[in-house]
Amino acid sequence: MNKKLLIAGVLLATNLSQAADFEVSGYVGLEWREHFEEGQFNTNDTEQANRQVGLTAEPEMVWSLADGEHTIVFKPYARIDSEDDERTHADIRELSWMTYGDDWELTTGLSRVYWGVAESQHLVDIVNQTDFVEAPDGEDKLGQPMIKLSLIRDWGTVDSFILPGFRERTFPGEEGRFRTALPMDTDDAQYQAGEEDAHVDYAVRWSHTIEDYDIGLSWFNGTSRDALFSPARSNPTDIVPTKLTPFYAQINQLGLDLQATLDSWLWKFEAIYRSYDDSVKNSFDELGKLTQSDFGVEDFTAATGGFEYTFYGPFETIWDWGILAEYQYDSREDGSIAIGQNDFFVGSRIAFNDVASSEVLAGISQDLDSSDTRTLFVELATRLNEGLKFNVDVFLPMTGDDENLSYQFKQDDYVQISLNYYY
Image 1 (cartoon, one colour):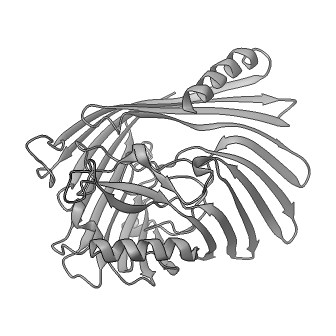
Image 2 (cartoon, one colour):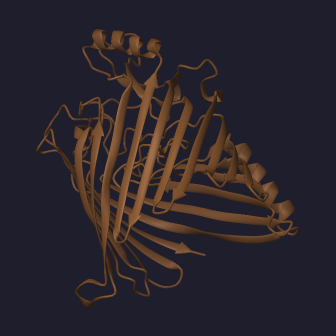
Image 3 (cartoon, one colour):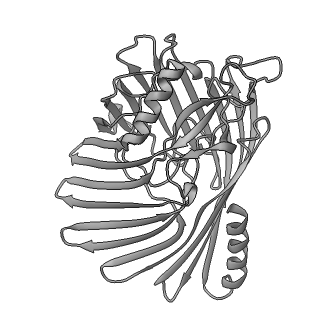
């Protein structure tokens, strides 16, 4: 699908660049990532990378036609990684056409949308698939085929989505980091839906601002963006499972996101309820009995809530200094199948408000059920000149609990330096 879309995008650029207002922007980047520890799953045949060097590019081309009544966006993305073949990949983040009227807006093609308000995790953000090979925080998303109609009314905005086609989640290869103990067989993904990745999903979201409060209610029906995993054997002669196979179930999900802006306080809350078909729950229950494992396929509720308080100009500076705190809950209450089931996050954000737009965000998530399980991160960004941006990212997962889901990542801590040129 990506090759066809790329060809279509090139033809689109050729035909329209002379016929409409045209803008091009984007960036190219160089990235260096150093891991502090040896890979946890090194074998005689496979050695996980200790150092990864990458090249990235994300151009964006925008055509505006008929005095802005029609807009076409083409935004491809590509990464070359020195060690992990699965991390070397390309994607069409956006290839969409948008038009609008007085109280409506229509978008068709590949696009990305974001739902949610929380800092530490994004529960309600379900439309786009996670591009997991990019980073373990799940912030990066793949482009999703969609038809999106937005109706703008006095009582709120209703966004309706038809989502024809599913994007599988990306996973690291055997030489990559943040992989599972058993390697992931992405070539043999399984689906509950008979149409597999051609299944059509649906979503609706209502959003509205009432004085100081922003509220969103959402519903999604279709193929889950989170994969379930079933152990499998690479060969019939294997005695024990040697790989994991992703399984994408059909789900219904209800979501709520709420944000209140009260002076220097920013209060945030997200919650979801997700349900599976009984056939999926029964199948994984039987698989769990055979493998003596708990796959945790059950209907569940999850929530994240907290605040960000900002000090403006503290200590006689021009900085904005924010303090963040959030609590994460998951009704499954099992750290082996859910991250954030009973966790507390605290962090700090500083915007230095200087010419270089320097800022730093740091935080820690602590598992309240496992005292030695926590994740620390630091994100630093500054501009070296008008077009050159310098980033430093530190990610430190820590745990000694071998029953915790994050145990498989405990030796994947890293520091990453990025240099991006924007044009």
